Structure formats: C-alpha cells, structure tokens
Length: 233
Image 1 (spheres, one colour):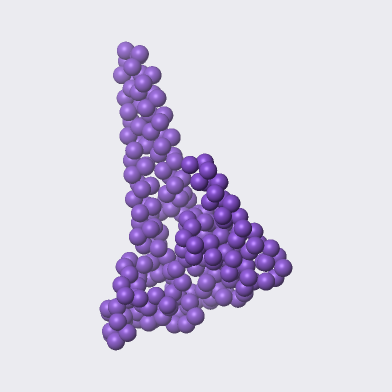
Image 2: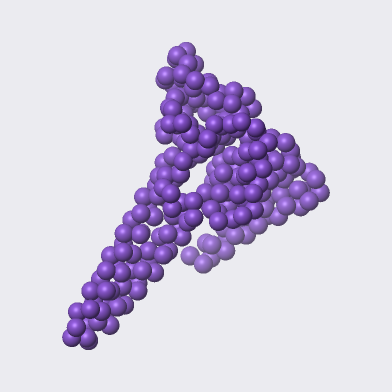
C-alpha cells in the first residue's frame, strides 16, 4: 500500500509541477493542459489540482470554467479560505447567475466524507477500547459509555459513506461557452423546458446517450447536452 501511494504521488508530481511552472511563467494554456491531464488520466479527484485549474481559468478570463473547477475544489477542501475566496470572485465576474445547487448534506460544507469517516473510525476504536477496559469493572457505566461511543462511530461512518456515494452519483457541472437548453427528454428534438446562462451550476442525476439529466439551484430538472457543461473529474 505504501509503495502504491508513493507511486501515485510521483505520478502526480510531474504534471502538477509542470503546470505550476507554466502558470508562473504566464503560460496559462500550458498550465491548464498539464493539470487537465491529471484528470484525464483517471486519477482520484484532487482539491489542489481543481483549485489550480480554477485559478488558471480565472486568470484566462473564462469565469464559467473557473467556477466549475473551484466548486469541485470546494467539495474536496470545504474549509480552504483561498478556494472560497477565488470561487466568490469568479461568481462575481459572472454577474447575475442562478443560485448554486445545494450539497447532498449540510455537513459537507465543513467536512469531506473522508474526514467524517475518519472521525467515525476514531469513535469506533475509542468505544471498543472502553468496552474492553470496562470488562474488569463490575459497574456497567464504562461499558455502556463505550458501547454508545462505538455505535456513534458506526453512525458517523454510515453517514460518511452515504455522503460520499451521493457526491459520486450526483457530481456538479457548470454551463460553459453559451446558453444551455434544457429539454423534456434526451433528444435534440425534445421540447424545450428552460435555458441556463453560462456559469449556472447544476447537479447531474443521470446520463444517457450524450445527454445529462440535471437539476439546477431552483430545483428544476431537464435534459442537457453533455457538451454544454463542464464536469470536473
């Protein structure tokens, strides 16, 4: 496992470093290409890479793509002030845009599923330890406390798993390049429901034949061409 993590780290170091050097030299297209390659190679989502891409697109003046990647970074680094600051700047450049889609759960604005799962694991281990120690105590207080803490750890772990699955099942996307037409079904001939301006954020619910069933910040749903939106990672 250690060797695998080391290999992944070394594999990411090249493109990330190349992108950083290109950005420092003002070669925005080269920086974007280097960091985009990390996602195209099928790597695990990275808050650092998403933030770098969002920052590069912002400097390039492409506000919708900046929002897309900074929003992805915010999901992976919810307490990162730099991410939140740049995301606010990018959204401000768009002017009046629909509200952002809500997160699968409120706690995700503070913790990632991995972090909550880690807390649950600590609680489970602590509770198990209290139960074991309590066996030598004739009173049930310590064992009951340990059992309660352990159950709490299991609950937190379950919530973390559900949240992680929700993020994977319903990734965020942002309308780019031009106005997006949302239709009744996955067809260019289907009736139009409504339109979204560049920079509008949507949550993906389903994919079918080059179309995405999405939900916007107002709760409206419709099918949109996958080419009309940017889906980080």
